[in-house]
Length: 132
Image (tube, rainbow, N blue to C red; front, side, top):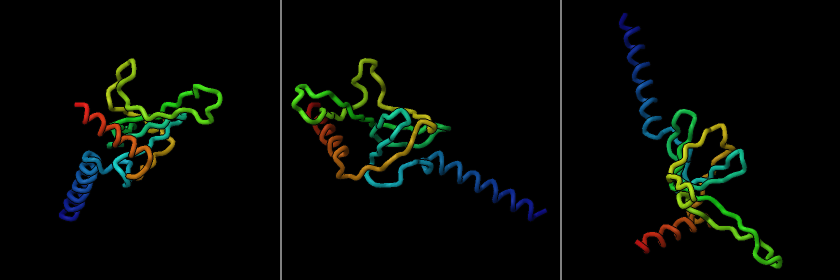
């Protein structure tokens, strides 16, 4: 009888610890690097932001940016114009939170703190705070 009680208590404690770990963010998909990740989707879109905890079958992304590619204005320009855009200024006015179904994620990469994307994000944030 005592042995069964001990086993039940151990199982309950393990379940509670595991649930708490997942609830408090232990189930995050990020493994390190900078605070930012690149999320590659099955529809060929890439979003940059902070990957938060997984909720059910969704990954939460905040502080979101994406690349906008413009066509060259002159035919003599060899490269298209590429701009990093902060999510939220679009016509439909989305909030700065995205819940992405895990089935639509190909992979997630941690960005280095000195990557061009992270540098552009920090420059954008500095410029925004200077205008406030």
